Length: 449
Image 1 (cartoon, rainbow, N blue to C red):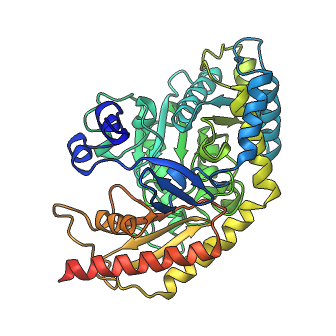
Image 2: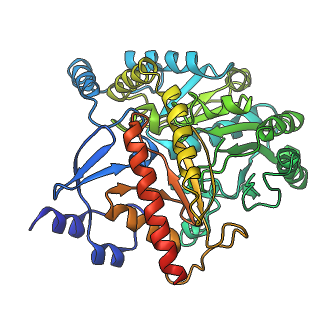
């Protein structure tokens, strides 16, 4: 039995229809370098998705392997429960605190993004109880936000297809419209759009009762929902509203953090400091599983003052090998100025796509190397292609794969998501643009007949 047959027989893949996978077969990646991955048949793919939007420093960085090996020989594991700790976890916590937005001086480690979100929600609820708000448990989220697939994180995510068969979900999560200036009620040409979208948060807080709301949870730039960039002043209004009603602001920077959007943190670009910040993905660039929650000093101080126990933890939290690898990953990000590189190459990517004047692309947007292209049937009216048996985006995704490009798509709208490693070259950017333009035109023309 060959490896592909073993794969289909034994490995449960993420987010698949089992019959479709059996029919199409699997693509087994065996090695990678830079922005390119190679499958078991020797075919090369330019990975414009950076794995799952996390390989920020690129594939094949041998220095991270050396750091991991050295740490394994020294101390391969020790936990961070009770009074115990380990040196890499302490040093990484201090490093993250030094890089964090002002006031976020406390760090809790997790194994990934969903665990970071779950942790932030628990801390927010604990904080409200410590302040005397015993009914302050509700978490307000955006309807196009994505926060993970564990039961609590899924409850924060409003995508119905993700949630449909797993109920009942965790109570206390409510959703409001996202600041989507392409398809939402307030469009990009409305100078008041940011304030109007933020007002929807205030309306919901008042409707729920401020004393019942623990936090507002949002991605600074919505990722899986379609790389939705809010109006510049949206989060400033949100911060004022949260402060007004004693609601914590949790920003999910799992996808946007560590240089992806052209700055270390996306929240920098919106002039806002959250109370808690969720991290993962680019923290290690995928070389080992690791996540974190940055927590405001004032949040921990309130919990400590009330003498509430923090009954929360994970066996692998603060894993010394993962933390050592994260330190080296951050050193590479800083030394090679990859956030600045993302800003520069992201602008090149956007302008090149716009210059192609593709009739099936209605909007190109994004920050850094987190770029979206809205796919439509008619650019002037923004009419979409009918979904039918197969949405347009899936044909574009498949066409790109045939051309040797792995690209992302939004799961529930015709939006192309372009998130390559931050080490992608200018020549590779130009190749992406060529492939996208050609495939989108071909598939669009074919659909129009």
